[in-house]
Length: 507
Image (cartoon, rainbow, N blue to C red; front, side, top):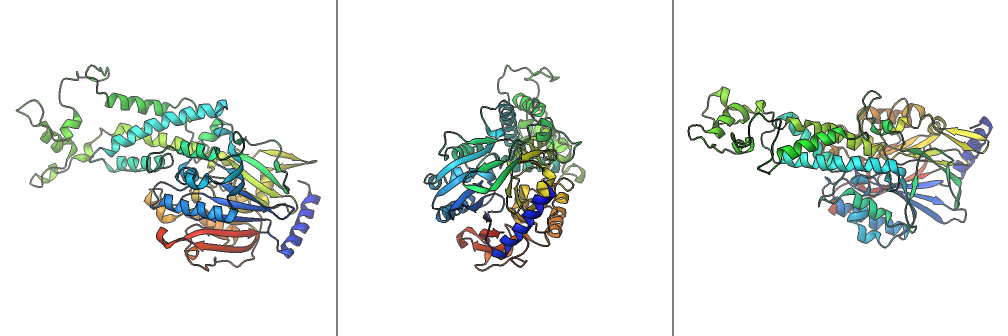
C-alpha cells in the first residue's frame, strides 16, 4: 500500500495504544495438540462479535474428550452460546473433534455462519477429486495399519512405519473409530445458514458489515495441485491428486495378501496355492503337512527368530532376515501424501485492522506448499494494492502453524518477511504429547529459536508451565509490543496439570 496511508495508520495505531483499548481479544485454549481459538472483536455499538476458529484435540491425548468438554463449557460461559462466525480450517481430528465428542454441548449454541475452505465444498470439482484420493488413501492405510498391528517380530524400520501410520490415522479417526468427516459435518450443521460459506485465495478482501475497521484476506488453500502436494522442499513432490498410485499399489497388495478365496490365482506367484505352507501359518508355529520337516521350526531358525536360548548363538535370532512386511513400507509415502496434503488445504486468514494496519495471521496447519502459494497474491484495496509481503511485514501476531513442526513455518517466505517490531506468537503445542505420538521434535527447535528472536521473547506455548497457576505470568512484561494484557486460567486438576486457556488483549 502507499507510503502515506501507512504513515497515517502508524500515527493512529500510536493513539490507540495510548488509549489502551483492545482491537481484539484472543482466547487460546491449551489442549496441546489441538486448536481452538476464540476471537472477540468489538462492534461500533460496543457489543462483542465472536469468531471461533476450530475446536479439537488429538486422539492420543489421555482424557481428550473430557478436556474438550471443559473447553466447550467455558466457551458457552464466555459467549453465552452465541458465535457470529465459526471457522473450520481443515479436516483433521485435532481441529474438529470437539464438534462431535461435545455435540450435546454445541447443540445449544447459536452460530451465524460457518466458514470453510473451497477444498471442503462437496460441489467443487477439485474438492471432489481431492476427496476421492483421501478416501482411497485412508482405506489403504487402514488396511496396512491393521496388518502391521497383527504382525510380530517386525524389524525396527517397519515398527517405525507402523507407529507412523497410527499417528497419521489419529488425525482421521477418533478413539471409537469415528471418521473426521462426521466431526466436520457436525460443525457445518451448526450454521444458521443452509450451508457453510466457502473461501479461496485471491479476489477482494472479505469484509464484515458489523466490523467496519476489519478486513480479512484469504491466503490459502491454493488451487494448484502441485502446491497441495508439496512437502518440505520444492524438489520433493508427491503425486497427491494425480491418481493416487501409492494408494492403488498398496490396496492391490493388501487384496492379494488377504485373499481368502481358495480359487484365487496369483499370477505372479511361482507356486500353486496348495503347495507349501502359508508364511503366516509357519510364523505361528505350524509344522506343515510333511511329517519329516518341522516347517515352523525351520522358519524360526532361518527367517523369523527368535529360537530357544539353548540354540547356538548364531541361530538365536534371524528376524533381521524378514522381508514379508517390507512391501507395506510404501504406506509411509502414502501417509505423507495424505497428511501433508490435508494440512495444505488449511483455510488461511489474515485479519487487518484498517486504522492501524496491523495484521493477525491464522494459518491453520498450513505447510510449505500452502505458504509458498501465497507469495504472488495481490488484493485490490481502494486505489492501492496489497501484497502478501506487505501483509507479512505488518503482521504483529502469528498463530504458529501445525504446532510448530519443522515444515509448517518457512524461513524465507515466512518468518523472514515478518519484520514488525511488535510481532508476538502463540504455539498450540505440547512437547511431551508430541513425543507420545511419535512426532519427534515439536515444536522444532530452530523455528522456536527464530520465533523467540523475532518476537523478543513474546512467544506463548500451550504447554508453558506458568499457565498451570491461577495467577501465572508470561516471561515477558505486558504491555509489550502489540500485547496490552495477558490472562490465563488453569485446568480442572482432574484433567491433569496445565492451563485451560490463555487470553491476550491486543492493541
